[in-house]
Image 1 (cartoon, one colour):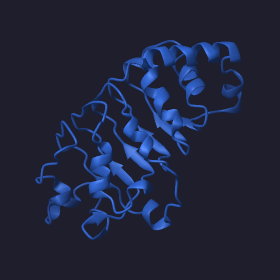
Image 2 (cartoon, rainbow, N blue to C red):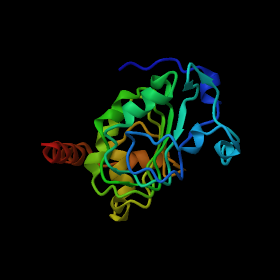
Image 3 (tube, rainbow, N blue to C red):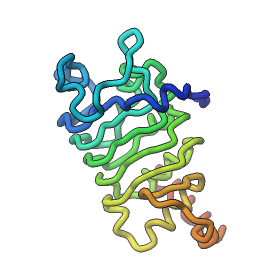
Length: 199
C-alpha cells in the first residue's frame, strides 16, 4: 500500500471519536454509538463529528481509546474502510486504554499513519511492536503502561526496533539517545530474536 498526500483539511478535521463506547471488538459496530446519533450526545467530547461525504467521515484521525478491545485488531481495516472517506489518509490512531495483547498486520495497510497511541494496554512483547516498524511515516508512538514498559532498557529496545520514530511516550527522541542505541551486533541479535518469535 503506497502513501498518499493527505489533504490538509483532513489532518485538521475533528477526529472520529469512538472512545468510551465499551467496544469489545470492531466488527460489527453497534448502531448505538454516540457518533452515529444526531442529538447532542454525538458532540460530547470533540464538539461534534467530522464532516461527512457519502456517509463516510472526512478525517485523518480515529480515536478508539478507553474501550475494551482485546487481541490484535484484526478488523481495524474493515472499520476504517467503512467509516472514513479516504481510509489510506489515516494519520493518527488512538488505541490507548484498551486490553490489546498484539498488533495486527492490518495496521500496515495505513501507509500515512504517523501517530499511534498504544499506552495502557497489555502489550508484553517487542515482537508486536516490531511489526509497526514497516509503517513508513510512523513518527510518534506511545507504549507506556504496558507490561513491556516495565523492563529495564525498554526505551532503548523500542528505539532500536522503531528507528524512524521521533517521539516515544510523548517525549522527543534525542540525538544522544540515538548515539547510545545498541551496536550492530546487538541489533542483529534483537532482529533475529524477533524473527524467531514470529515463526
